[in-house]
Image (cartoon, rainbow, N blue to C red):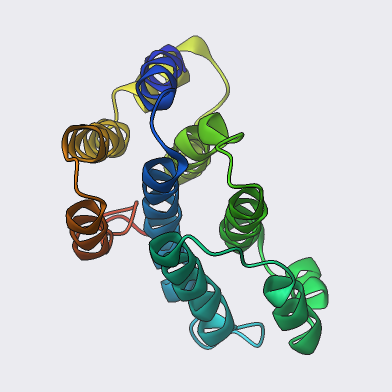
Length: 196
């Protein structure tokens, strides 16, 4: 995964001096691309909690804009909707998305970008697993090369670079926030999907 590792290092350096309000926008946009997978995958599943998790994401967006803490509101929502039990029953793919939401909320309450590398990597790790599964690859150097050069990996690198360029070059937070809200809707899988 050398291409992704090199990219991760570059992004981490670029975000190193950025204020947390900007870093958090990069992070939630990464989660939003994963969210589109959960949103589609959970349709007609008994563990479908799209309304709850969408509400959590919207809460994060609001907290980023207002610079507020989420505090215990997240835990209250989890308890009220029995989300811990739900997380034990859903598939691994969906759990990746839910874990990302939880990690972002925890980080926001610290107001410190301590997990930038996690949010850069999480989408690559997801795509790595998906591509291995999609093409029934065996672990090998050849398979790693195939993954590294897959269009989904290249698209994610391009997407992250575009976001980084925008949030590090634009001074106005309101302009950046509006741009991020308008440009976070694409699924990380694009036109690809699971053979269910």
